[in-house]
Length: 105
Image 1 (cartoon, rainbow, N blue to C red):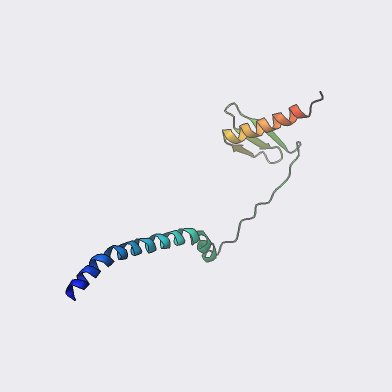
Image 2 (spheres, rainbow, N blue to C red):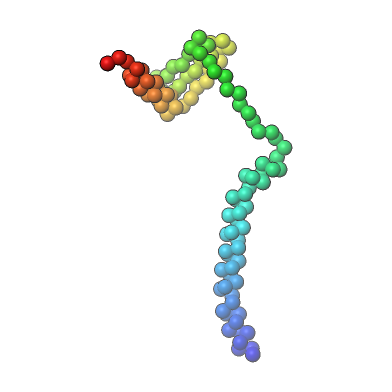
């Protein structure tokens, strides 16, 4: 009987280790997956709603700097927003494509 329990321990120990490892991995995945949802439920802060204001060419000026940054100047308030080079170049190229496609042939 003692021999049986020794063999059972030798056989069940790796199974127990793999079971513990699998349960740990699954619980870590579940915690990571559901963390943002649980955080939103716990926090009391309301969702931020950003108001979109449409401006025409009389109210703002758009330019691209020599470094390729997009610069949007608000003429009414004197404030400006600066965007990084990839954003500036994307807008500049899109605007150029619109100008080229709208020219008479």
